[in-house]
Image 1 (cartoon, one colour):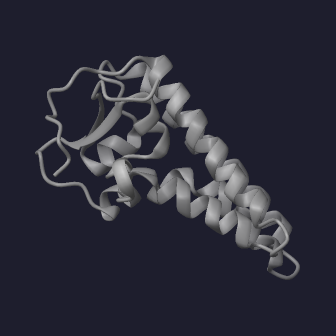
Image 2 (cartoon, helix red, strand yellow):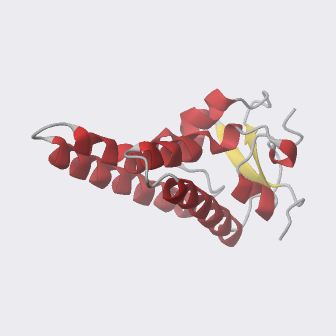
Image 3 (tube, one colour):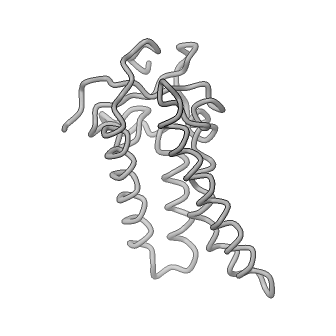
Length: 158
């Protein structure tokens, strides 16, 4: 179903960075489109970041738009089919920052909660970046949680 073996080649840091940047642009654009609806933009942004590898739309099939453009594919280490649950397991920490703004609506302590969640989210992102560079196969914490890895599929648009 996912069309790639866990033995695929390890993508370059450049490929991973550009794919992540493209996904970040898409998530930010979604949030900006919904900026007029209080709190909804952040929730949609977080939903995209968390669910992006579980998409089954057209040629994107179980990889984010950024991964599709860069010719990367996500695979389970045990070759099981990918699911939306896989995406949530490996990406939940990337959505923390996006939904932190929702806590601003909590009376009295909302601003403090939002700030703490934003810092936690930033910490997760920095930890994930560190892991991509520190791991010899480029697996981040989310990959270890989801038992996945990103491989170069060679079928990208760029």
